[in-house]
Length: 206
Length: 195
Image 1 (tube, one colour):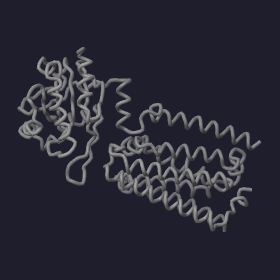
Image 2: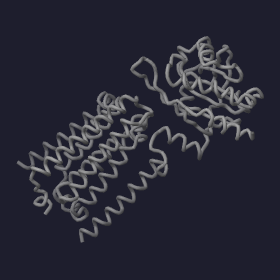
Image 3: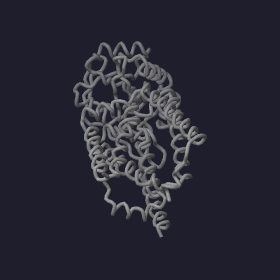
Image 4: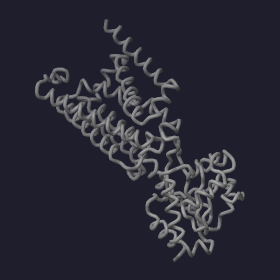
């Protein structure tokens, strides 16, 4: 009798546990937070905030929503960074070459948002673009004007920033694609600008 | 004498739980991935293990009907443990309050307690398989954490992740040597206690 009961209890627990594990990993696709936010976007694009004031490298103030109507490639950086942000800067410079035509037409724009606004003044943002060998066309670097704006951006884009032992920050570095309607539609790993360019050119029908 | 031992054990469970609940302790343990995985969660499991002494005899006898040779309890404990091994869950447990509550309740009540109720009933083979699987899990996860070039948790640094990997490999090796030692020179009394 107790064997049957144990079998029944075990099957119920295993079924419930399996269901929970399946739910917690998006059907065994996402075991890390980074994969999870990519998988979630595939099903449900996220609307970017309607009002977040940014100050660009030229000192101009723009609202993030002003950039709607074109495709945006966004990365998150801080100018003191000597590792992933340098790599991301490099990739954006490569994307300027690969996406030359749509950038010139204004159908695509590159945007580097600093999450260290206290330090990253417009002058430092301009230096970051120079250091990354920006060809000027279509690449903005900007910092959020208010702490609330920064918090909103971090939340919506899923950016986690933690201080590291070198006095800088460790952060999840990726390239975020926002469509002309202002929806975050995809997050791509860094290290493959060719793929980013291909995806964007396909979206633009080229 | 038995009653004193019981109240002592459930008292230390309560005390340990309250200490782990203290915000500075919780923050300190969750500041590092290694401490969360190898100190905080194991101690929460220990709380559940100690709670066993507080379970009344009447209820113990009733669970026995549903836990032949400790199998059902083992399934519950291992599946819950598997959940708390997911990197994204370890990540979210430090930032999402609901998951923090789930961790503090499920580690003692769904891992520690059922395991404590089941271990004495398990036979030699079930215990052996469980231990072998525990050692294998230490090696698998340890290797993963040590070798992964990318961070598996957004809230933790890469060197922390690699330290966790090293610690897991060390724990797995320790368990393996202990088990080998016991197999070669030890005595096994589990048949007596399982009967």
